[in-house]
Length: 579
Image 1 (cartoon, rainbow, N blue to C red):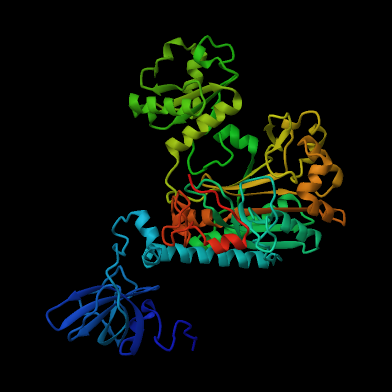
Image 2 (image 1 turned 180 degrees about the vertical axis):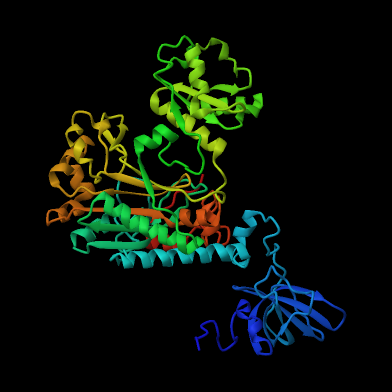
């Protein structure tokens, strides 16, 4: 007989574990009173709630309990009378009868209704997060998260990865995102930081011969919050030695597909890939949402010698909006304003009607230009064509942003489309001092075919860097790391980092590399974002137990707060008065 791990000395199991095969059994269950319904003076129905769901208990005699009281109910499992079954409940066929009720804790009336049928202000929910946890949706979201974490851990272990915990108190690194700083009591005037990621720590593990490392890691970044970003976040972090980019993509793909199957019950197809250049050209972004079409099309050649001033640019990109001919003029004006806010000089639009192209610019087009616009993505009558003329990157990005604004379904709708985006640029531009800026961290290995371009055409150098994208959300990034001293020296030189500065910023890593660093590569992706998509949530706060608000506040605890004068003295801190 299987062991009932849910049974304790106070209960025989969870509410939803009871079923019709147990009719006649006398059992005890514990939970919260979700609802009480009176039937006459001497009969009451209690809906008892625990983490598994609801169970109806029939209580005879007088009983003084209210919603959210914590109770222990002992009763006999019985079939519900004919006509009273509830198909919406897992326990809808049964009830507990002949019940004895023991009150374990009294409760005040909660400040909001604890079912999901009522919209509740998020500020109130966060202030009373401990009550928000009792709602079915929050229970489902956090248990889904636990299921994903467990699946990821099983998958990584099955692939030979060793779980290693890296420090949360780390050395300051003067690069990347802003860090949370922790003053040291034992070393007055010196500081730790909370790590943005275990990047350097995991590379040192590769030098140490661990070969394959992973961690479900807590990371911290002192950056402005938004729907997909919190101060503290959780990522699956991994690194492996003697591997290529394809190996890492294989490791991560297997783990993500395992997690998706555990979360949704369906295993997605093999994850495909495209280069960064292809993503920009077709979707105007490095994190394309592949749930819908509306790809970008290049009309630059057709408009190369145009007489239409609006199309006088090095690049003309166009996009078909299915059914968009129904857009009102005010809607089109809104899209035009949005394009301008994104940096475009304007937005040209053309409605395909049964008779002709309808647009303020239509009469200025040549026959070839008009035909090219009609032919975008096999457009049909009733469609809308949007065009942006600018430099190549700007035209792609502006139209790509409009594509998402117009066509992207809500997070919870449509299939899950994963895609690897590879071959990112090694450098993203030049700073005010004339030095190149790295698109990733300075330990990213350039594409070996592009090594000779580092000194001559650095902006054309591709990195062995890769992102995993799901439905328009960037889940995470990774790269093959530089392990060769000659290549690292060339990249530092290109970035304007002197030998002295490199030693100051990355000395302990560079020192470790002198003792034999294996070829290695890694990746990390955000578990918060992955679970939010699985749960159909637009904001990762809904899948995090204790999130911060948009302003970085914890409404439940009141953090951040001042500390005592004694603590400040112990930390040798002098605080400048506010304001």
